[in-house]
Amino acid sequence: MNFAGKVVLITGASSGIGAATAVKFAKLGALLVLNGRNAENLSAVANQCASVGKQPHISVGDVSKESDVERIWEDTLKKYHKLDVLVNNAGIIETGSIENTSMEQYDRVMNTNLRAIYQLTMLAVPELVKSKGNIVNVSSVNGIRSFPGVLAYNISKIGVDQFTRCVALELAAKGVRANCVNPGVTITNLHKRGGMDEETYQKFLEHSKSTHALGRPGSADEVANAIVFLASDLASFTTGISLAVDGGRHAMCPR
Ligand code: NDP
Image (cartoon, rainbow, N blue to C red; front, side):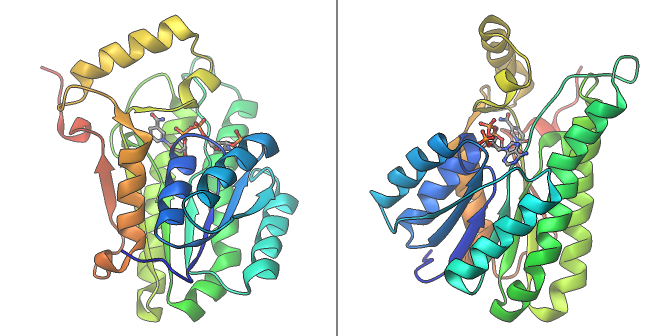
């Protein structure tokens, strides 16, 4: 795998899966644009990337805001004048069932996890068509299986899978691929930011030993490996796929 001279834009690169993906692309020679809301964390990730590859460009912004997405896209074009790979990774989780959710929660989760992907991809596609580039979206095992208690999140993620397949079909004739990864429980800041305290999170990770066939939660690095693979020429005949990176969780049925 070699991304020398390739421009890669990653949303949500200031933490977890996005940060691990950024470092991996940097090692493979990519020219990176890193997005997130937290400028300090983004700088720390950019420094990590610079220590193994080229210095990334940072574009701070909230992907749930249309004007920020437009600015992130303009920043990218202004800096590199092209795009080869778009990694739509930024996401949030919130707990809520049909009995206690709210329309505010629905909007927050959907705007960040799905609407932003729709908008940024729409803006980026003309450049991806020129470069015959590709898109990797970060969905979830929740995009292919159903779980109670995270209703808006589940809906947003199955939307990501359907979006990926449709866009893959729409752009295939133009030589642009679109795929997504579907991680299982991955050790990042996602769940704690979604409201789990430290003790609950540790119990959740312990429980993951039985909910994932491989007997453990995954690491951000393991998901990053799959993202980089799908973005690379090694995956040149793969489009429209939902690649589970979940220790077999998607294949399990309770018994
Ligand atoms: P983290 O919380 O560690 O990282 C989330 C990233 O998304 C951060 O960089 C954060 O940026 C960014 N982000 C969130 N909201 C916005 C926003 N409105 N605008 C810009 N950036 C935003 O979580 P993960 O690394 O785990 O999450 C990455 C993706 O992986 C998500 O889409 C998540 O749904 C998915 N996923 C994660 C799983 C897990 O178990 N961890 C399992 C399955 C899927 P900042 O902090 O700067 O605001």
